Image (cartoon, rainbow, N blue to C red):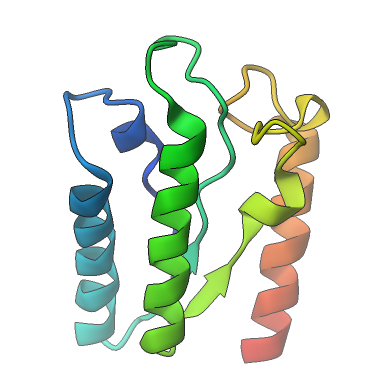
Length: 128
């Protein structure tokens, strides 16, 4: 059994109040550890690029996303956890989610999800 974990952008957007990148990272690691403790193999995904949060433009999200992704990737390497780097395949020159992959700069559209699906299927083929 597997669980796909893609989390963090809502925390970065502070949708329920301020939370640090470190706290967000700790929460995601908890999800991974809970899965592992139930013999469910986690597949951890990078947060998608977001150079600005349209509903909270004062938040400098681009660098926060990069910081969180660096922590997630390092954790996966150190803990033998599968990591899917959506960010690198979907980021533009200004650390944004490329315009052709999104309808609001944060959420993927059909084209964005097509990239994500292909990457996930490639990983699943290798581990199944």
